[in-house]
Image (cartoon, rainbow, N blue to C red; front, side):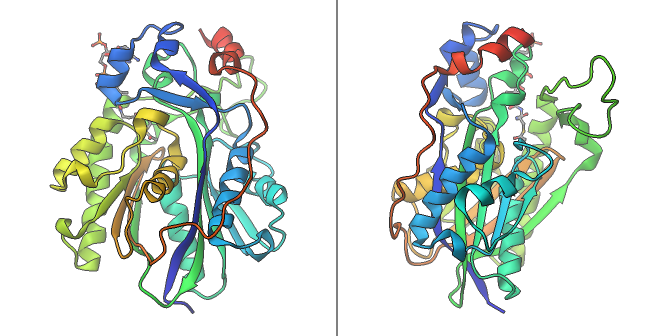
Length: 356
Ligand code: ACO
């Protein structure tokens, strides 16, 4: 048994092709001004490789930051709702690509809450004493699912991956407490309706893999859901809002983030926000933002960091991280994605042609 599961490594991987609001406006009936004011997004990344490749590079960077080798990893959880394949799990592809030959591996799909869900599961597994070194990855290629004739969803999403390494610790660190929930009565509010065994795969129109959502309904439930989980987490730990040093929320919409900060009476200077650069990368938003907060010197030893997320399900999650001593990586990885010689619009060319 171990008392705590500290985060000892972190890394991110964002694909190089940038899609700006102006570029989207050249193919979809929208504008930079609408997207910026309604969501806070200025640009997003479009991946030229599948989810497992993004996850692989983020994982290699996180392992380097923790200075551990892949054979030391005994648990790998991949949060994703945009898998390379359903069978096998995408985690199995990542295991092979990073050569984590001793790891138990599985995918966890909790939509955009997937990283907090996965961190919660991995923390419990390390605390139980059964596992010693865990990789928790959030990786998504959401742009693959976009229907470019749905302008409400088309402008919001991007691709990317982030990862952390967890190790046992006797010092108060890592995820101290988390609480997870789901509002299954609203499961249809965000869906890719034809990606599974509920449809007739022989029907002529089967296989339309579009993200569809009810933005207003999600918006309303997101703020309430994250606030509810946060209240539970702080209450359980005997903390008050003022005890929070930093908030790393899921990045779905700047207005949702601002509403949460307002509800918690926390100044926006304590909130990590990078939605302007990446849009909503689903389960990757929080580990990418955490990595950037560390790289930018925003995380200090001993900080109490609130994670809060919501996503397809509709899942909701919050957790309180206590940061350990080290805020710098132990070493760096030279892992890189395969080169990309296309622009974002070129990568998306066929999808735009077929869905517009
Ligand atoms: N460009 C221009 N106009 C648009 C666009 C667009 N891209 N999208 C919608 N509009 C129009 C609508 O048609 C509507 O026009 P109308 O008034 O003539 O009917 C008008 O803008 C306002 O539409 P609303 O839906 O009310 O806009 P809202 O301010 O609610 O913003 C948004 C929409 C950005 C989708 C918001 O509701 C939102 O962020 N929702 C939650 C986030 C979300 O759903 N994230 C995705 C998944 S959640 C997760 O992370 C898993």
